[in-house]
Length: 519
Image (cartoon, rainbow, N blue to C red; front, side):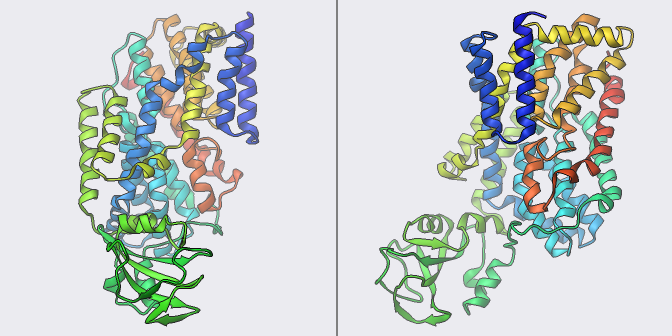
């Protein structure tokens, strides 16, 4: 074993241990990987920083912005309300509907975006049907993993695998070609969760679960003795509570119910002090003011340092049950983006970047919202682990692993080779990022395919399926982590439902994939 190969394996092993320990931030680990490979001379400077300019990173960043636009304009909440009205309150019907909704949304805006957008809706639905959020949230995340296999947009892994297929001299995968395995996976996932979920999912309630704000307007009207029409939440605006902060510049100002603020954009509906409603008042510290107006005006006022906001207007506007102009604009941009990707009008990163720019240009969301929506940790992990994939190839580590795998299973059974690749991806994917895992193993799969003279397409598609089988631990994916706090899940809760699902994905990757994409 040469020096570069040994160094690559040592860095990879240390990275896996660091990821599993959960003591070092994942982003720091990923950056450490790139830095270690450069300092040891395994890769050059350009390769060490190449990940930060990779199209997958740009594409992923744009998807975060698009996801935020869909959620912030109330589209997700509106869809959730429509779901409740149509399927009723039966546990099984709601569970299936929520999972299918998440899978469909994932196919358009990625796993993390779909799960992040639907967590508050799912918590709200759980409260309405008198179920623990834990009974719905893990199925939500797992449905997203299955939904990621429905289209090219489902996950950045799909885009990356598509590019690897082209680099390997094979044809690209079609936009909906992933659904040939995605649909069976989704059906199998829903079936397993429906029948096994009630038996293995925990019956706990998180103390810090997201608040159900679906009845916020009615609560506000009752608490402050207001007309419900004054506090109603719609696409254009609503009402919010603010508290006068210590040392606020508003202390001493005269206000009364019905007056407009200095900007003229907001109306004061009520003023409360110590539980008493005041007709007129000179503001003091701790006074509560109920404001009504457009969401933009409420957002601007809520950000004032002299006011403390009880519930952020940006959270309230997501509860709108009627779509407005910005909602329609967000849906239109998303539809155009999907259409352009289907016809392969431009590289996926360019199309997604254009869609994100359109969301900002049309003022669907603000620049500040877009900045907060982008998960820098996720981007850093992806960018930091891409040099590992480069090192695996340039050092000869991938070739060594492929030769070892060939020696162990022989060249006579492509199916056995495929199972070996799938097993490696599924096992590694439970402890480090599934995208990072695929980045590491992809060169091995391509090398194995080249060495045995088989098509790389079944190997690459099998890796995509195996990469989506991130069910056994909360650290496997960001989506798994996102549902852990509101679902009150513990580390050991995931494998109970995740193990049969991982077996399903392994079987599909090993046996069904070669039937569709022959060796």
